[in-house]
Image (cartoon, rainbow, N blue to C red):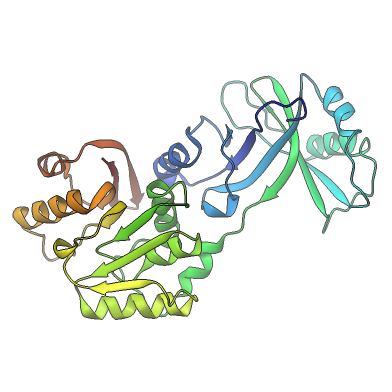
Length: 317
């Protein structure tokens, strides 16, 4: 911030009710906290396009006790010929939040925008500024919108009915690897590669493995379709993995007609304990006692619902 303090960011987030639990788990992983509203403040800076739940990131430049103070600060901004616009951001926190109607938002935006020395441009400005009230303090900064990159990945050539959605897969990757640098990830039951595509699109070092030859071919085809043909997808049983990884992402195999035997699931989880320091496990059944037997401790969790269908996401160490 301008006085030399640690730079802070305000993230504008949104989700439907069925994905709220996953959204909060992702925010705890990415930002260190989930927040109680659509706004989460953090010292962690991430690209808002990483998350399916982050809509905008406000890099806080000034704070003030009132809008007049913000307007005074805004007058000091140097645009160097760039055009701009200003947006008011709602805070839907039931305690101390502030939601504004359309007319009031436009009024406040004009009041602050008039103090900025430069040309306002509503459609395609060079820079976008935003402001919001959080905890009784007004915050003003530069606003960056996220891009829904995962939506493009819905159009993969190979699809599978029980595969994770691209939104859920992207959030799970963020839970597993909140820091993309120097993190080695494996998806040892990668199926058609939904998790692999999301991880590769974020620059994460990930490898896939799949015991089903047809699924492995589908994963390679999907990766190549999106330009990630260099990704490694090995054919084989995860229990044969001998290399070491920082984290494993495992969507437990299942279908509606059969369930893996207890011993087979235990062997799978014990093998994961051997090749990964951490694991993010996706399951449709309770595996708490099995994970404990395999040597894991559950450190965080959430539930993702889709109609009557429910998945658990467990963060294990």
